[in-house]
Amino acid sequence: MIGLPERTYLVNHPYAQMVLTKIRDRSTGQIEFRKGLVKLGRLLGFEIARTFPISKCVVTTPLNVQAEGVDIPDIDNVVLVTVLRAAMPLTEGLLKVFPTARQGVVSARRMEETYRGGLEFDVEFTYVKIPEIKGSEIVIIADPMLATGSTMLKVVGEIYKLGVPKRLIFATVISTEQAIRRVLSKYPNAEIFTVAMDMELDERGYIVPGLGDAGDRAFG
Image (cartoon, rainbow, N blue to C red; front, side, top):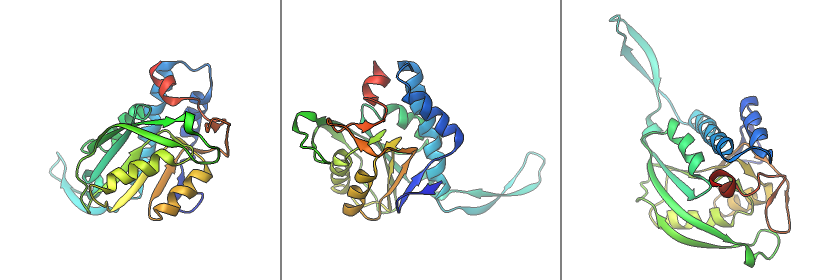
Protein backbone atom coordinates (compact mmCIF):
# COMPACT_ATOMS: atom_id res chain seq x y z
CA MET A 1 0.00 0.00 0.00
CA ILE A 2 1.08 3.55 -0.69
CA GLY A 3 -0.16 6.36 1.55
CA LEU A 4 -1.61 9.21 -0.55
CA PRO A 5 -2.44 11.64 0.99
CA GLU A 6 -1.96 11.25 4.77
CA ARG A 7 -4.18 8.55 6.37
CA THR A 8 -5.13 7.34 2.88
CA TYR A 9 -4.07 3.90 1.66
CA LEU A 10 -3.99 2.90 -1.98
CA VAL A 11 -4.46 -0.83 -2.58
CA ASN A 12 -2.09 -1.12 -5.52
CA HIS A 13 -1.79 -4.92 -5.65
CA PRO A 14 -1.65 -5.98 -9.33
CA TYR A 15 -4.66 -8.27 -8.89
CA ALA A 16 -6.73 -5.42 -7.43
CA GLN A 17 -5.71 -3.17 -10.29
CA MET A 18 -6.59 -5.88 -12.83
CA VAL A 19 -10.07 -6.26 -11.35
CA LEU A 20 -10.51 -2.50 -11.29
CA THR A 21 -9.53 -2.28 -14.96
CA LYS A 22 -12.15 -4.91 -15.79
CA ILE A 23 -14.98 -3.11 -14.02
CA ARG A 24 -13.98 0.27 -15.48
CA ASP A 25 -14.60 -1.18 -18.96
CA ARG A 26 -18.04 -0.16 -20.21
CA SER A 27 -18.36 -3.51 -22.00
CA THR A 28 -18.27 -5.40 -18.67
CA GLY A 29 -21.76 -6.70 -17.92
CA GLN A 30 -23.82 -6.62 -14.75
CA ILE A 31 -22.79 -9.98 -13.32
CA GLU A 32 -19.06 -9.51 -13.89
CA PHE A 33 -19.22 -5.94 -12.58
CA ARG A 34 -20.90 -7.11 -9.39
CA LYS A 35 -18.42 -9.97 -8.98
CA GLY A 36 -15.59 -7.47 -9.42
CA LEU A 37 -16.90 -5.34 -6.57
CA VAL A 38 -17.10 -8.44 -4.36
CA LYS A 39 -13.46 -9.27 -5.16
CA LEU A 40 -12.35 -5.73 -4.41
CA GLY A 41 -14.29 -5.76 -1.14
CA ARG A 42 -12.36 -8.82 -0.04
CA LEU A 43 -9.03 -7.27 -1.04
CA LEU A 44 -9.90 -4.07 0.81
CA GLY A 45 -10.76 -6.19 3.84
CA PHE A 46 -7.36 -7.91 3.74
CA GLU A 47 -5.57 -4.55 3.60
CA ILE A 48 -7.67 -3.12 6.43
CA ALA A 49 -7.04 -6.22 8.59
CA ARG A 50 -3.31 -5.81 7.96
CA THR A 51 -3.44 -2.63 10.09
CA PHE A 52 -5.05 -4.38 13.09
CA PRO A 53 -2.82 -5.24 16.07
CA ILE A 54 -1.98 -8.93 16.43
CA SER A 55 -1.32 -11.08 19.47
CA LYS A 56 0.74 -14.26 19.72
CA CYS A 57 -0.98 -17.50 20.60
CA VAL A 58 -0.29 -21.23 20.77
CA VAL A 59 -2.52 -23.99 19.39
CA THR A 60 -2.33 -27.77 19.49
CA THR A 61 -2.35 -29.45 16.09
CA PRO A 62 -4.03 -32.81 15.28
CA LEU A 63 -0.59 -34.37 15.75
CA ASN A 64 -0.72 -33.26 19.40
CA VAL A 65 2.10 -30.79 18.78
CA GLN A 66 1.98 -27.16 19.83
CA ALA A 67 2.42 -24.50 17.15
CA GLU A 68 2.86 -20.78 17.58
CA GLY A 69 0.50 -18.52 15.70
CA VAL A 70 -1.23 -15.17 15.74
CA ASP A 71 -4.66 -13.86 16.57
CA ILE A 72 -6.29 -10.58 15.51
CA PRO A 73 -8.51 -9.62 18.48
CA ASP A 74 -10.19 -6.71 16.70
CA ILE A 75 -11.41 -8.94 13.87
CA ASP A 76 -14.54 -9.44 16.00
CA ASN A 77 -14.90 -5.75 16.92
CA VAL A 78 -16.06 -4.47 13.53
CA VAL A 79 -19.24 -2.64 12.61
CA LEU A 80 -19.78 -2.56 8.85
CA VAL A 81 -22.05 0.18 7.49
CA THR A 82 -23.25 -0.26 3.90
CA VAL A 83 -24.33 2.69 1.78
CA LEU A 84 -27.19 1.29 -0.30
CA ARG A 85 -27.44 0.16 -2.93
CA ALA A 86 -24.10 0.38 -4.71
CA ALA A 87 -22.03 -0.92 -1.78
CA MET A 88 -23.90 -4.21 -1.35
CA PRO A 89 -21.40 -6.27 -3.42
CA LEU A 90 -18.48 -4.46 -1.76
CA THR A 91 -19.89 -5.42 1.65
CA GLU A 92 -20.24 -9.02 0.51
CA GLY A 93 -16.50 -9.09 -0.07
CA LEU A 94 -15.67 -7.33 3.19
CA LEU A 95 -17.74 -9.90 5.10
CA LYS A 96 -15.40 -12.64 3.84
CA VAL A 97 -12.74 -11.04 6.03
CA PHE A 98 -14.97 -9.75 8.85
CA PRO A 99 -17.69 -12.45 9.07
CA THR A 100 -18.77 -11.56 12.61
CA ALA A 101 -19.19 -7.85 11.91
CA ARG A 102 -22.32 -6.20 13.18
CA GLN A 103 -23.99 -4.39 10.32
CA GLY A 104 -25.76 -1.15 9.59
CA VAL A 105 -27.30 0.18 6.40
CA VAL A 106 -27.98 3.65 5.06
CA SER A 107 -30.10 4.23 1.97
CA ALA A 108 -28.71 7.44 0.48
CA ARG A 109 -29.47 9.36 -2.70
CA ARG A 110 -27.35 12.14 -4.07
CA MET A 111 -29.80 14.81 -5.12
CA GLU A 112 -28.15 15.57 -8.43
CA GLU A 113 -30.59 18.37 -9.14
CA THR A 114 -29.02 20.29 -6.25
CA TYR A 115 -25.41 20.01 -7.51
CA ARG A 116 -23.82 23.42 -7.30
CA GLY A 117 -20.40 22.52 -8.65
CA GLY A 118 -17.27 21.78 -6.67
CA LEU A 119 -18.00 19.34 -3.83
CA GLU A 120 -21.46 20.50 -2.81
CA PHE A 121 -24.31 17.99 -3.04
CA ASP A 122 -27.47 17.64 -1.00
CA VAL A 123 -27.97 14.04 0.16
CA GLU A 124 -31.32 12.46 0.98
CA PHE A 125 -31.55 9.53 3.41
CA THR A 126 -34.63 7.34 3.02
CA TYR A 127 -33.62 4.66 5.53
CA VAL A 128 -31.05 4.50 8.32
CA LYS A 129 -30.47 1.48 10.55
CA ILE A 130 -27.17 1.46 12.44
CA PRO A 131 -26.42 -0.42 15.68
CA GLU A 132 -25.20 1.38 18.78
CA ILE A 133 -21.48 2.04 18.46
CA LYS A 134 -19.10 1.07 21.28
CA GLY A 135 -15.84 2.88 21.94
CA SER A 136 -13.94 -0.39 21.47
CA GLU A 137 -15.25 -0.97 17.95
CA ILE A 138 -13.95 -0.23 14.47
CA VAL A 139 -16.49 1.19 12.04
CA ILE A 140 -15.98 0.51 8.34
CA ILE A 141 -18.18 2.45 5.90
CA ALA A 142 -18.47 0.78 2.49
CA ASP A 143 -19.23 2.87 -0.59
CA PRO A 144 -17.62 2.25 -4.00
CA MET A 145 -17.24 5.93 -4.91
CA LEU A 146 -15.91 8.76 -2.74
CA ALA A 147 -16.49 11.59 -5.20
CA THR A 148 -17.38 14.74 -3.28
CA GLY A 149 -17.57 13.46 0.31
CA SER A 150 -21.13 14.75 0.80
CA THR A 151 -22.66 11.30 1.36
CA MET A 152 -19.83 10.06 3.59
CA LEU A 153 -19.96 13.12 5.81
CA LYS A 154 -23.69 12.71 6.34
CA VAL A 155 -23.30 8.97 7.04
CA VAL A 156 -20.63 9.66 9.67
CA GLY A 157 -22.96 12.19 11.27
CA GLU A 158 -25.57 9.46 11.69
CA ILE A 159 -23.00 7.02 13.09
CA TYR A 160 -21.69 9.50 15.65
CA LYS A 161 -25.21 9.99 17.00
CA LEU A 162 -24.90 6.38 18.20
CA GLY A 163 -21.38 6.50 19.62
CA VAL A 164 -17.78 7.27 18.74
CA PRO A 165 -15.77 4.26 17.51
CA LYS A 166 -12.14 3.47 18.22
CA ARG A 167 -11.40 3.76 14.50
CA LEU A 168 -13.36 5.12 11.55
CA ILE A 169 -12.47 3.60 8.17
CA PHE A 170 -13.82 4.26 4.68
CA ALA A 171 -13.63 1.36 2.21
CA THR A 172 -13.92 2.64 -1.36
CA VAL A 173 -13.02 1.59 -4.87
CA ILE A 174 -12.36 5.01 -6.40
CA SER A 175 -11.81 8.29 -4.53
CA THR A 176 -10.88 11.84 -5.37
CA GLU A 177 -8.23 13.74 -3.49
CA GLN A 178 -10.65 16.65 -3.03
CA ALA A 179 -13.20 14.43 -1.29
CA ILE A 180 -10.56 12.75 0.88
CA ARG A 181 -9.24 16.09 2.09
CA ARG A 182 -12.78 17.29 2.74
CA VAL A 183 -13.60 14.24 4.86
CA LEU A 184 -10.32 14.37 6.76
CA SER A 185 -10.75 18.07 7.48
CA LYS A 186 -13.93 17.18 9.39
CA TYR A 187 -12.75 13.84 10.81
CA PRO A 188 -8.94 14.02 10.94
CA ASN A 189 -8.59 10.60 12.59
CA ALA A 190 -10.50 8.80 9.85
CA GLU A 191 -8.71 6.44 7.45
CA ILE A 192 -9.47 5.91 3.76
CA PHE A 193 -8.71 2.67 1.91
CA THR A 194 -9.20 2.91 -1.84
CA VAL A 195 -8.17 1.03 -4.97
CA ALA A 196 -7.71 4.12 -7.17
CA MET A 197 -7.49 7.90 -7.06
CA ASP A 198 -9.15 9.72 -9.95
CA MET A 199 -8.49 13.42 -10.22
CA GLU A 200 -11.56 14.92 -11.89
CA LEU A 201 -15.30 15.42 -11.45
CA ASP A 202 -17.52 16.10 -14.45
CA GLU A 203 -20.35 18.63 -14.64
CA ARG A 204 -22.67 16.19 -12.83
CA GLY A 205 -20.24 15.52 -10.00
CA TYR A 206 -19.28 12.05 -11.29
CA ILE A 207 -15.70 10.82 -10.94
CA VAL A 208 -13.77 10.80 -14.23
CA PRO A 209 -12.71 8.34 -15.64
CA GLY A 210 -14.53 6.51 -12.84
CA LEU A 211 -16.88 3.54 -13.14
CA GLY A 212 -20.13 5.18 -14.16
CA ASP A 213 -23.09 4.67 -11.83
CA ALA A 214 -21.94 1.72 -9.70
CA GLY A 215 -25.44 0.93 -8.44
CA ASP A 216 -26.96 0.84 -11.90
CA ARG A 217 -24.12 -1.26 -13.28
CA ALA A 218 -24.24 -3.75 -10.39
CA PHE A 219 -28.01 -4.21 -10.38
CA GLY A 220 -29.00 -3.61 -13.97
